[in-house]
Length: 92
Image (cartoon, rainbow, N blue to C red; front, side, top):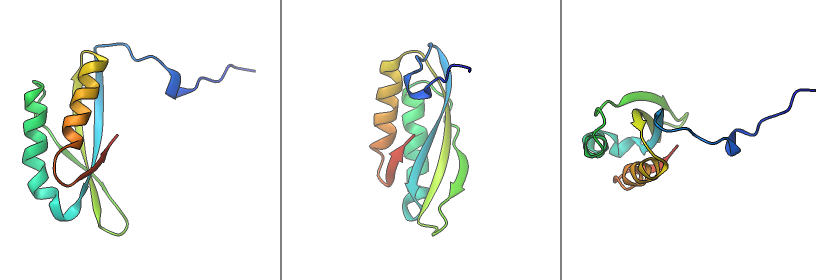
């Protein structure tokens, strides 16, 4: 039997291309978009935000934000700054 790998225990190797998924309240999404782009620019990332899925209730929507991460510290700091934008519920 093949050995199963737990993806939560895999070590990331930096630099790594990553795509954050930012879940935002739909009512605050338009105001959040430029703030999220500014956070990406702060980390010298292209301020590209792609629309993702909306929740079935329409209360939340997802933005996808691609980034090239050079370290775990950068990944954690960027995720924290994205999460701090008003209207953001969580970042994956």
